[in-house]
Image 1: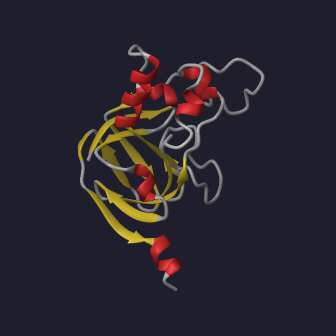
Image 2 (image 1 turned 180 degrees about the vertical axis):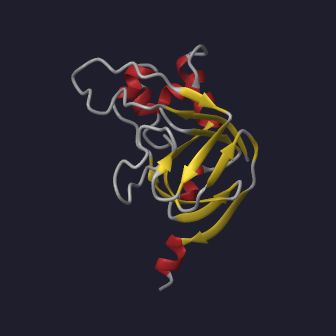
Image 3 (image 1 turned 180 degrees about the horizontal axis):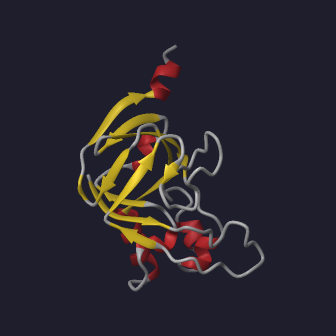
Length: 168
């Protein structure tokens, strides 16, 4: 797998803006980012958001973004417009739901699909929410401190929690 892009934003542009225009807090593209156990990404709007928060970090597949761009004929928007933190290639993110996994020495637990909201239609294009309803990324908890950086990365499944529960 490869980490293609990393984004953070210090403020929400969509959460809390229902029925209003989106905010204007810029996305900041980073070459590396500090992951803090149980808290999130240093400098991101969701850092220390809530105890046991399921979306301390979000991942999105570059391949899905490419399909989205092709479907809508849009090339000028960056993947960051979707407001996911880490854009990766070469991995089926939804297969990591219920798994503990490690990337570049940092451990995570895949918690759930990062379902798209109506803002996808504003941020990207009308119909984007529907297009992404089955594959809009992965929410995860951060289980160990460390740093992610752009470039090649090995994905290591540490534990398939779902399999352990179903076998109990």
